[in-house]
Image (cartoon, rainbow, N blue to C red; front, side, top):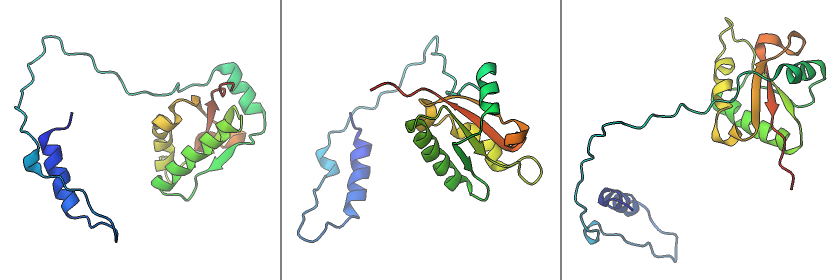
Length: 163
């Protein structure tokens, strides 16, 4: 149910928009919206516990990690030289593509940054918890030295459901 404040705000926004040639803009008058009584919530005796934000498993299973580190990584993305917005978008689209192609692991090269504290290196694990990736990421681990070590991550991907 929409609140009267929402209708009033929408009416103000709609007043600033001009329709395309040959079309008529709908009108919403704030006076047409009945005023709802303001209700103050009662304090709860036992407030519900808040859930921690979703985080993918931080470690890949040891046997799977060993297999991933030994095989050549066909699915890889290098985020060097990208700003945060571009890197996040590239990472999301790349991992969705890799998962849809049936890859079970991907190598994400973030770099270490100038002093070993790179922004992309710090932010990539956060981005892997995004709703778009939540259903496909099984785990994340630091890459083996020959795949980039501290400047790269292995991302284990879940199996695709059978059609």
